[in-house]
Length: 498
Ligand code: AHR
Image (tube, rainbow, N blue to C red; front, top):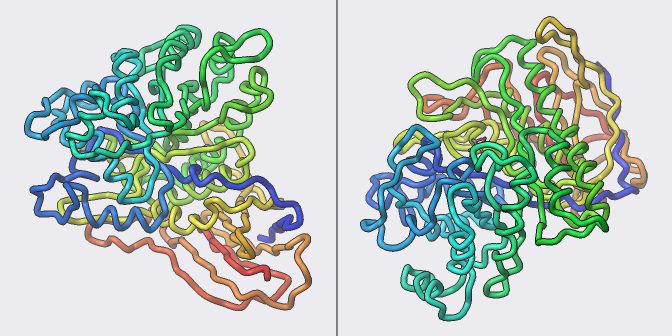
């Protein structure tokens, strides 16, 4: 199937915020406990209880930001439970996720250590649902104050004389649901009270992230911002970002799906574009100057539970890899309106990058996509036009269609990165690629990375951990550029424009 891709090199777009490649870890199933954190006494090699192999792998993808401790868990988490000598921390009940016992061994200091080890900015989601304004305000002071207040001295006594300088703070999570079941205007009232007391302790300017709606509900966003703003479109409290969540869900199960279900899920993943458009439009009504950032602080697939596995554990196939690639391409293309995104979740939960079992670690296809796409981080977006064949499928007795080929492009210095997904289950796409505005050339020294598999259900297991891994090739591509993109594939082409 032929397709045409035009890259407007001469019309550079906005910088792709590195934070669009962000992550999320919640105390849920085996994400934190028995995933990222195994404890200092574990036979599994670790640094202060944090799995060494996972830290090493995480570093490979340059994670810009990590959100913690939830999710729903955030609004039932009391930060004081997770600081001080570990043997004196209380054992609490994780009421959101199976009433599991929470030892609190992984708390604020362990989280900051993890962030530093992997090179990510910390993003703390505070407890608005069951906490108090004073509790969240104290957490900010504990983390960030730089003079000897009692809380700053407590942080020093617990091992960190230097402030943590945490900039990103979530003011609750999913306030419309597990974060307190608020209606938008009641949440706005609560939000205003919290925002008033969350201060820039220690000179770290806070970036306060309010909860957005349940999926793509512009009316929620409007009602919330209306309550928070005055008639002359000023906000009467601090608000720096609004966090939407987008789970494209499932079709079939994690590993069993028909070809139609393959398409259905990929089409739904592409739907994140609509959410970003609609949410920004709703925000623009109250914030036309775009002082409030739109963030997507949870996204990913959500398959039915895997029998016998820990909470929200799911496998990750080549289909999940395409979901990740389609989503990241959308975020790159919409870098003008979206500033941060956090895939749910890092390890062993939902669309995980890492699966662990005892000392075994599996890098999922989603991990490989993040590694292939990392060159887009902080690069300048290049506008892309794709003339693509259309793929049709049937879902719920209805015929639907979507473009087979999608992608995004960016440039950093003279290095061009072009990522493309071919969603077709059986056919290759022959793409001719025009570089509008680039000087004439006869050939390009290029590198091409491809992630694909003949089996649409392929995934990595603890027995076969590298069943799905990218193939890398250095090659000289003649101009004009042409790429043959195999079925069910993610491709990243890199070349120098100089
Ligand atoms: O990521 C799992 C859950 O999904 C989070 O706890 C919650 O915020 C969302 O509903």
